[in-house]
Length: 401
Image (cartoon, rainbow, N blue to C red):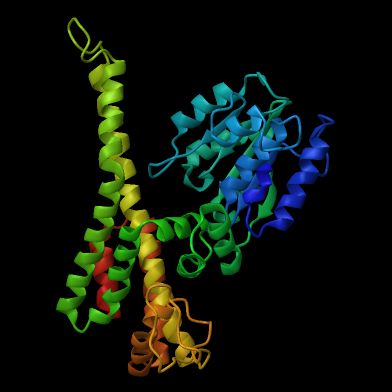
């Protein structure tokens, strides 16, 4: 299996990258191959997967065969000439970029290229972005920069003007379902459900399909709007949503945090004979705790953002019914796989809630549905600007009441 085979619904991107890999064999910068690339696309479109696959193909002697040592280590993040920068905190700071610039100044040690993949270029602080700009303006002769961001506007104009831009598309529901069935052995019914409600986000679709607890949490979140009847119920719904997001983040981070702390303490000599940790160990642990706290904050906000997107799909379905683009069958709904009666069109995302959606569509005027979707998008924006999560969600739920 070649490295580009996992890019779902991105044939236009695969062709451009194949052409670039072929051109790179000459070692010269051409119209097809350049030293800086910017991959953009909505969450789940696979922009970081495309960048890593391109990096593997560049250093592979067989143009990305997917089976050689170079391909496998590059895809796993362990190749000496491929530097993958991921941030789990809220931003990428200038100190991290300065350390990166020192490393990428080295010549390739194994392959013909030294490749830097930055998965969250939109999280660069302004000072960090300016520090990186000089390296992109004056790159090493065998260095390639692959930056990833949701949109062009998330990257400084001075950086994006020096990069070749590739725009990824959201994969279709059918394409995501086919990948889940073929690659992960998921049943067709469950694959269709996961692909539909994840809106083309391949990673999220896979987690939904294989983890019952994630499906249960989503089901609880999707029923919250139906419980909001007054201000008191709005505050209860907000508390429930924030609690679910925090619980999900804590579940993911607690065991990992403890393991990281133990490994760092052992690296500084804790548990060995003598006086314990070497000088500087306590400071290193405090720095790690600071990073873990920043990561936990981001995980809560990411979880809330995903929940708000799910709720937005509910009101999108309400709008579809109000516009006459979806009808609800009087037959029962098969909640196991989201199948609906034959009279139900295929335009609803949340088919399993079709009757509740129809009732809400009858109760709300169409302009109110649009206002509620706008309120959800505003709450997402506020969260991205570090607004207090609970206050933001409480304000949103009051707007939905």
